[in-house]
Image 1: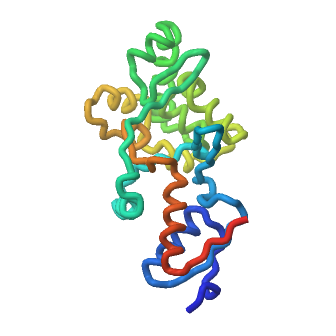
Image 2: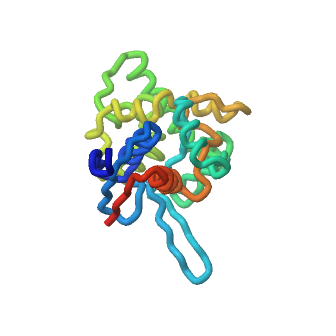
Image 3: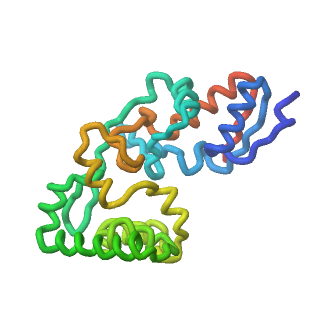
Length: 236
């Protein structure tokens, strides 16, 4: 079997995962990528200025999963470059920074008594409509309002999502919300922030694994591995 027997289009996560599985089975392949850098949307861009090197990922790709095979796979190829990172996430809203996952007292201090009270009553209203009266959830906006209240949802979730995706949240399917923020709501967000060992929804985790030099390190390492046995990766 030669390199031309199996051709993989795209050197993103899916394409290189396929090439890696073939590598482990002793099968050669040729991966064709139109970009210069492998990794697709999970690539790491590298900039050099004078004696300094800067790396930036196209969006965060933190790894937190119950899939042990995935952890073992990445740890096996990266070894000591697969590191545990303490999460430091901040949201910048109305001129102030908010720690995420939410810290109740810090958020209360920033928002203020009046606005916090309005948000609380908004949540109770939504709880009544969606949880007690069983109002139907039709889209992402409904899902957020049902779980956080309209005021809190508009404060830090709905506006953010619209900005990222460029469409109104009532045009995004509710199933997407269930995937992205499954199990997350106003009550368990508060309870989770008060627990020393956070075992709440995965979006509230306090630490995660990440490649030392960016997510692209996974894919550049895979390229090195598969080339060891004669596979090819053609870019540009």
